Length: 400
Image 1: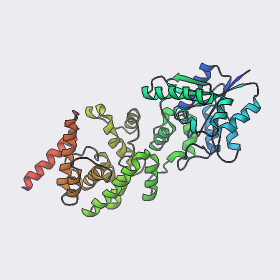
Image 2 (image 1 turned 90 degrees about the vertical axis):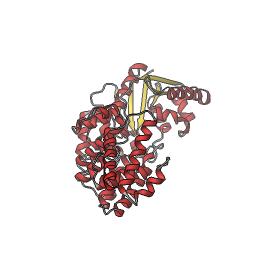
Image 3 (image 1 turned 120 degrees about the vertical axis):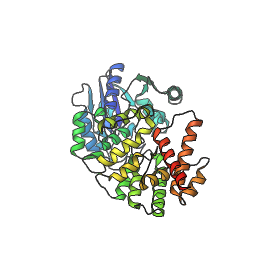
C-alpha cells in the first residue's frame, strides 16, 4: 500500500514556501508522491482581480516542480466545471488508487477553517488531515491548532497529523505585492518569475506606469490589506478637499493619497528587500524603527513602478514623519493621512477644524500631537518630525 499526498490551493502564484512545505511533509511522512492541484474556482475565497486563469497557474506550478522529485502538478480540478471541492478530488483519487492511503495537506488558515468545508465529515473518512504547524509560530495559534486537531478527531473521527516545520515565511498575497513592486525574486523559482514577467501577470512588465486614476485606485485597493482600504479612501477624500481649499493640484493629491500606504502591508524583512532594490539609504533611526520604512519605499515604488512625478513621490516620502520646510502637497498629504474620518483620538477634532482654516497651524498641532504621543509611550521620535516642529514654530514666531 502506497501513501499519496494531495496538496490543493489556488497557487496564485506557486512560490518556494509551497514547494518547501510539500518537500518537508513528503520526507517526514515518507509519502510516495504528492499531487499539487490548482483549484479552478476555490470555494473558500475569492481570487483577486487579474488572477491568471487555472491553466496558467497550472503551467507555473509545472515549472516550479520541474526539478523536484516525487511531487507533481495535477490538473484534475481544472477539468471539472464549477467550484473545486476537495471531497470530489479525494473520491477521484480513491478510485484511481484504491489500495493507497491518502493524505490531505493544508496550510494553517485552511486547517483553522476546516469545519466549514463542504462535506468535511466525508473528507475525514477519505484522507489523513495534515497541516503545516510552524515550529517557530505564534504560541496562541499553535494552541488553537492543537485544540482544533482534537476537536476534528472527536467530531469527525479524523486522523490528524500536525507537521512542525520552518517554512519559507511568505504567503501568495505577499508574493503578489512584491511582484508588483519588482522584488519577489527571493520567493520564486527563477523560471516561474520569467514566465510571470513574460506574461505581465500580477502587475509586472511595466503595466502600472502612469495609469489612470481609476486604475490606480483599483491597484491600490487590490494590493492593500482589506482593513486599510477605508483609511486609504478617507485619505483620498480628505486630500482632495484640502487641495481644493488651498489651491493645490487635486489630481496629484488623489494620486499621492492612493499610493501613500502602497508598501505599508510589506513586512519589515521585505521592506529591507525594497530598500536594497531601490538603493534606499536608511538612517540609524529608520533601521531601528522599520514601521517607518513604508514612506520611503512607497515613494520609491511610486516613482519606479507607477511613474509618478517628483511632487507626488516627495509627499509620499514625508507623509508619516513630516520634515522642515514642507511643500504644499507634502502638507496636504500629511494632514489628510492624519485627520481622515476613520482616525479617532484625543485632539484630532481641533486639528480637523484648523486644517481648513490655517494649514501650517494645523500641521504644527498634528506634529505636536504625534511627538507627545510617542513621548508618553516612551518611544523615540524621528528627528525629521522634531525638525519640522521647530521649523513651524520659528515661522509662527516670525509671524507674531
